[in-house]
Length: 155
Image 1 (cartoon, rainbow, N blue to C red):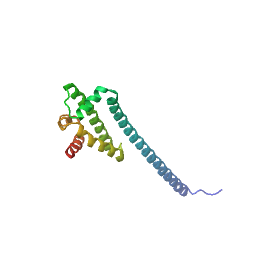
Image 2: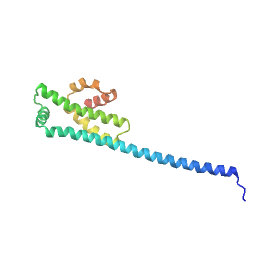
Image 3: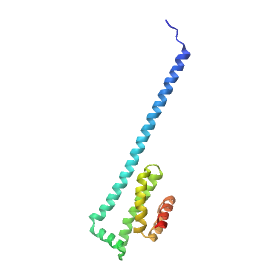
């Protein structure tokens, strides 16, 4: 019977174990990458759902559509209509804040963030008077406030 060299056997076992650890780490990295992409997709889809509902509110409510149209035309609104429009536009700010936070947390890819941010950077300052923003900004995180302030400054 051949004599077994315990040192060679131990060295071989260590090599096999090291290879197994590397392979399992690669599998974990792949799993984390897949999970991150899934979370990014979920966040983007959630924003699309919110935006679609926001637009559907106007499409399905003739009175709200009239309020939005009259505001954009520069017409005077009653105090109730102004409040309704202001709340409706606050939803845009909330979606922008959500996207901003998710992007900063790494849960929204740069491509989606750039698209959403370009939309809001152009539309919110044009549709939500700066005085309203100034009154509302204390409800948002400082980094988001600075970001929106910059959009107003460029508008």
